[in-house]
Image (cartoon, helix red, strand yellow):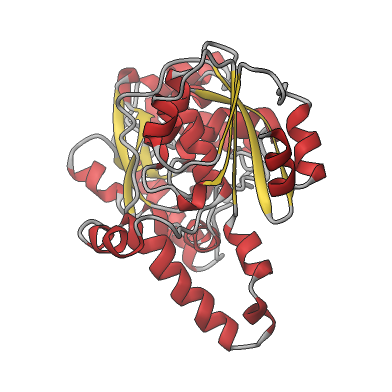
Length: 344
């Protein structure tokens, strides 16, 4: 089997895997399967599993990852590989033909990427394809791995495939609640620290929420206060964010009484831990808002400017609780329309 693996993936990928896995060990399972049953019922006490069947051909991706998780102990290694959307574009010869390539890739995206995630349509897709052809992003596969109890160790591209080395750190998440649709809800801190679901249009790949800590460890924060070099963001997501289109569904939260039109940004529990303590205490007294203070005050979107604008807004709000939001909303509208203020 080691020789078969070498022939299948090539020397570079083989040597990459060997850094983490004793491929010739009797306790290493080498398998090329898209069926979770084959891992669940494999005979042996494994401390490493290498599945060199492309994840693009898995019908039940998470079930197979969970099957691998269940057969391993904490800190044991699992290896998988897949072809990313970008790698597929590079491989396709039609990608060199102007105009036609755009039509082809848009059609392929709709059929092989969107269809498997649309309720009702996905049943037809899997009935026809049996899940053998799927477009997958790096963010989605890595997010699925983290969701199913693994921690990312390293990943690297060889021969058009991205090879992922992960280790088991916990049991799979039994309540993943992943979102595939255009509208999704994020866990954010509301007034008095209450966790609320803030609605937004999707700007990231599915399962991206599970990679938040990984992205921060990898790149840290950008000046805008958002994760730097965030590969979870989709191309259209950048446009949506620039013009605040992604935040329009937050009006649902306003109607529910969880947010206001103007106020500090709704942030995650993780980000809340990184802001100054005095600002934490001020934030907990008020509902978050759709339009952040840095827009009203026409400040830059750097972390320091955003936090300072929030502090100024909250202190003014404490002194003038009834008129502050009206003034800040009028200023925001002026800055967006006249000064063409844009989101980071």
